[in-house]
Image (cartoon, rainbow, N blue to C red; front, side, top):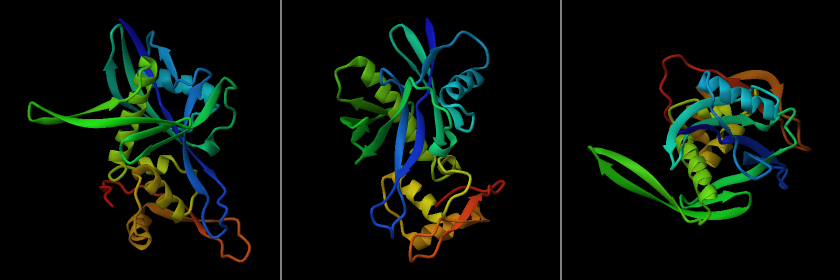
Length: 238
C-alpha cells in the first residue's frame, strides 16, 4: 500500500488596516501547489519528520517553521501520514514559483474558506469504548478536494484546541511582536474576541520586552516589542 507524507502549512500574513489607529489585519494562508493542493510526497524511507521538513524547506527556502505529526488517514489504496506546519510570512524568503499562498479561514464552526471558495461542513460526535470521537462531514462532491479539506480541517482543529495549553500561538508570530499582535492571532485562530486587559495580564509572563518598538504612526505612540519567553514546567491556560 502506498504511503504519503502530507502537510498543511499554515502561514500568518497581514495587511494594512485603513484605520491608522488599528493594528494590521491578521490573515491565515495555506501553502498549495500549482494544482491548488497541499504539499504531498510519497514516503520511500528514512526519518518521517525530517523527510517532510526537508521537502517543505526546499519549497519555502527556510527551515524556520514549526512541524508536528497530527494524525493518519487510510484511504482505499493509500495511507496519508499528516503533519501540521506553522510559520510566519516573514520567515519565507524564497518560495518555489510553483507554489502559492492561498487564503484560509474557518467561520462559525461550519464553513471552510479556502482560496476564496466556501465549503460547508458538520462536526459529529460518536461515542466508542467510552471515548468521544469527532467526525467532519464536508459538503463537496470532488473526492480529492474533500480529502484535502478534511486533512486541513483536522490539523486546524488540533491547533485551535491546543492554543490554550501549548505555545503553538507563538509559532505564528515573527521573532519580535507586540502584545496586540498576540491577542489578534489568538482571536483569529479561536474565531472569538477576548477582553484586552485580561488577556494582556495572562499572556505577559510569556513575553520578554526587547529594545525594539513599532514604527510610529503619525500622531501615535509606538508600541513596545516582545519576544517569546517559555516558562519551564508551566501550564498554558488563559
